Length: 395
Image (cartoon, rainbow, N blue to C red; front, top):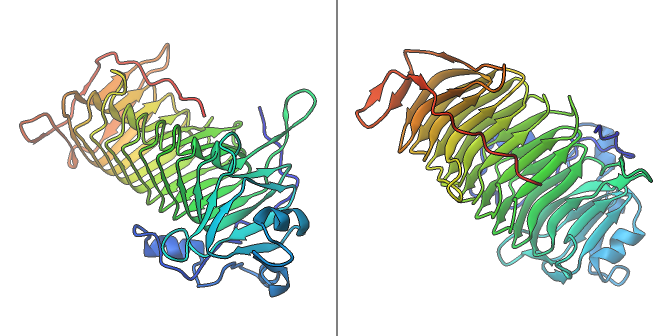
């Protein structure tokens, strides 16, 4: 079902670039990509800079705005709400506006903590085409930490999704899901999510998704679950993430033909799957580790799963070690391997499976692709153990 264009638009160049200590795992490359310059709001043009003028920045708490929600209700689209250090027990809604919410910090003495007032709703929801972004904020509790809630028409179909949104330098703990919902374009950078009852990030995308320099750990579901809303909806880019100790997997992309890129990331000690690519278009997986994937309730346990993808999957510079069932499992897809080392653990290094009339293929560089089954590195053989691919999880 196609997701329509958002009612309002916001250039993804308008990122929250703030003068505070980076996430411990931040990289110079991600800082450059995000345009970090020490400003709260940075654009690429004079028009963008106008959006950050001080006349559009409002402080909370203040005599005029004693609560965050009072500011969100009163201010026009294009405003920035600066929230002082402290704890705010509120469940917030940004309704039909593009507004930035900027705290003083997501940790330390100057932490700005949004503590959900109601665990049956989101701590922060963007509805009716609302968007903008969140920065330097800690969020605790709530049905969702941050929700993008679509508007439905009388027939129950999606008519409006949130405007483009940036989530930057945010810590989310103890929510049912960390970031959840339907989005047009979504950028997530330097975010830490832990202890969610289900998925850390669970996004249905109508546009582009970028997740950069982000940690998701100890989730009851998948660390990051991405679902493409429709064919050709957008591109999925995952860079510099660490997804570990999540019960039902590290990264799962079910993208309906969209291309994807997964680079310089770690998927460690997850249950069920390390990385699962299902139905994606041409995709690059470069410089990753997918290690120590265990079974989840006696199910699966594969380092990398590639399931009926519509484009070639190029895996380069990967270490895939000690996964319970299969190192790399290929279900009816075309996979290229270059500079890859697979250590089998208790299962097979490489598995290939035909699904219906759709066959699989591997292209291996024999000079630098090795499989270790306990006797040291050796040439790889593709075998078939007839495993079943994991069923996609619910958002």
